Image 1 (tube, one colour):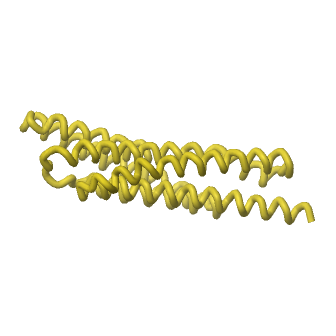
Image 2 (tube, one colour):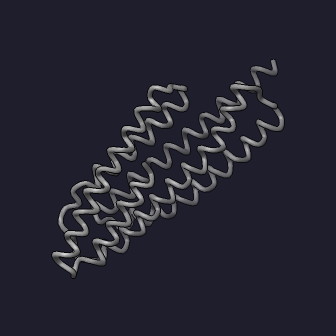
Image 3 (tube, one colour):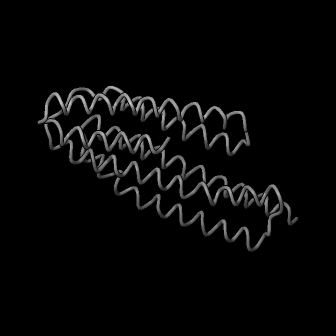
Length: 195
């Protein structure tokens, strides 16, 4: 009977982690949409939603401590709970990066539009995919999938370097774009940090 209780609690902890991961991925996608579509209302929604994600993180932390204290999981289950406790702040930090992208969108949306953001949407797509794949690999305990994520990180880094070069060139060629290009560069850096 006791083993069944811990299994239920571990399943609930896994579900809470996946909900946080889904909310984080949605925040990232909405932040990028607010930037690409110049939608300030959506950017503000991302910033408001960060409070919910912060609460989800606290709830998972509390529940993890409760599972550790009351169920005293052993070996594999203990590693799972500790891993969740380490992953949760990373997901919250990714949501903070999404919030920073939304803040950049709010600033950029008041400025004249720069040319198309070539690799930024690709970076965002790869970052969201990497996040999704990392959570899937963790919950399914798939080490081969975990190794694939490292390759995705390299792709995001390559995209970042292209965006960086393009924006620096834009600033040099047209100094009036410096402020806007710098905000885009910060948004790209937040995407790169997610990867």
